[in-house]
Length: 127
Image 1 (cartoon, rainbow, N blue to C red):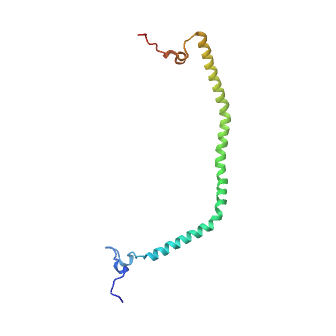
Image 2: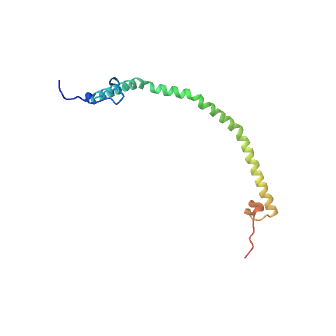
Image 3: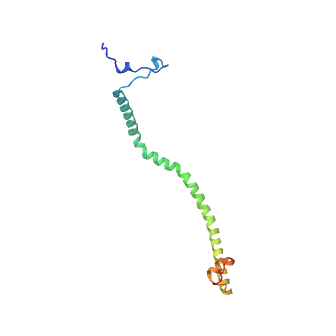
């Protein structure tokens, strides 16, 4: 047996840690071996599940469809109810504006900006 200490013998447990619970040193070869085993395992699982990717996406789309169609149908129904009301409101407003413009032209209320601003028009005295 060699008198030279090995890497395992040079690691000492911290104070208060028993010899049985001391961390074991892993060589680079052991770490590489474990990582390659995990990589191979992940590759096998990926290769096994790859043919199921498109069917899973299609089933997900079909499962989500009711959650998209129901709010879309509700929004369409609300639009069908609100559109006539908004159209009537817009036409009434236009009719009022046109009636106001016609009355202002007949009375000779002044310029268009004066009619638009109403009583807030301020006339500056001439210098």
